[in-house]
Length: 406
Ligand SMILES: Cc1cc2nc3c(=O)[nH]c(=O)nc-3n(C[C@H](O)[C@H](O)[C@H](O)COP(=O)(O)OP(=O)(O)OC[C@H]3O[C@@H](n4cnc5c(N)ncnc54)[C@H](O)[C@@H]3O)c2cc1C
Ligand SMILES: *[C@@H]1O[C@H](CO)[C@@H](O)[C@H](O)[C@H]1NC(C)=O
Image 1 (cartoon, rainbow, N blue to C red):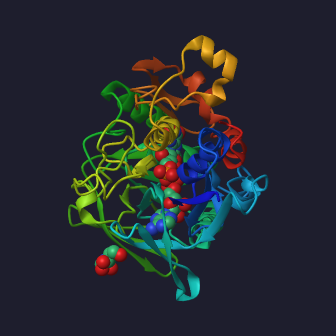
Image 2: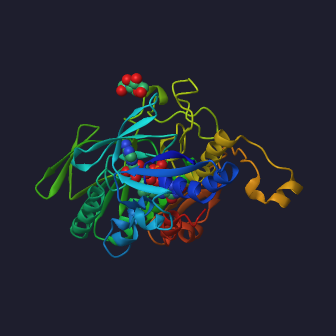
Image 3: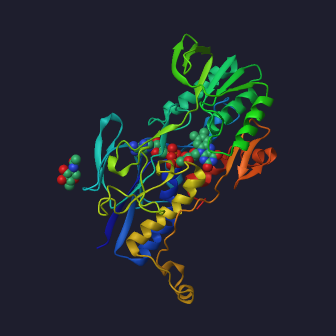
């Protein structure tokens, strides 16, 4: 008899899809070769049916032609056709509870049907939810696609546009708007004393002067939107200095909250992200080993992670190696032996997370250039355009969806 073990992956976007592919392609075959009495099955649980390539939304919101919605939404199921039902199942639903003792996740699907999925191994990649559905999924994916379509409708005739949030999303969005809508007056509120809080000040200052050069964008610091109200065709905003401002379009580009409400609070840090016990993506749990055994976390929901695809791409092989080591033990067959037996028979190797490209930011501002830093060095505008500004990384969606990137 072959023992079947269930791996539940929570969150089906950039992280969840990536880890599922990585496990199916490398880790599970390796473990099944090492111990033929056990086989593994993955259930990917997520409320969206399509992958959402959110990285491209600052340009995709501009109009329906620059980056059509078909290019940023693709059915998740299409990425897993090569796997059988014995290997992989996609469940459309939202994790709404978790019993760590019973090792079970409560999953709520539309129509309020509720099921309990027990897991042998759990991967959490539920990311964050931004205030606006333009940047992250808000459960039902039509909320995001409709929000993007509404921008296509409103922006062409807008005379005044206010973007809140001085991070990469706000800066990129203001730059895209200035590139396309020459007659609109665009205001960008940084919400703090500067733009791009995570980048070097010099990079932030270059971004600000780049935006100024467009002569379309006014950057305002130390002012936030406290309240927004629809009034007729316009938006009335109440600002943190008590003033009000009426604009044709308001775009909220401020950050998000971690999707960790369904997890035990003892697993979370003060920012509500999931704490790890080591640099290899193992979940700490409440401190007892048993509770968080074989539970791993990747992506934006990881405590202290820099919430980027670059970081996520490092988490994936590391978390998979932790899972493999926790099952089969760590080790490395000596070189000669490995050649004889083939690498397939070697034991898993533990990998540890190391930031691949620290101090790297690539922020296009419109279609002609932008600002960036690579490993702390200044990135020339033309390189920003070539690296991200031309395509907004759209060439990445297919390799992520099908797993061919791994
Ligand atoms: C506009 C924009 C531009 C970006 N540009 C860059 C860039 O240039 N370079 C870079 O490195 N990074 C960039 N990023 C960051 C990058 O997109 C994220 O780091 C990455 O998407 C993180 O993946 P994730 O799987 O952790 O989260 P997400 O991709 O957000 O996926 C989370 C998934 O979990 C699902 N989910 C949520 N709650 C639950 C639940 N309770 N149960 C089940 N499923 C749930 C969601 O529906 C979603 O499918 C950008 C992000 C944005 C928004
Ligand atoms: C969690 O599961 C355990 C073991 O099955 C059970 O005793 C306990 O009541 C459950 N907790 C909750 C809150 O349902």
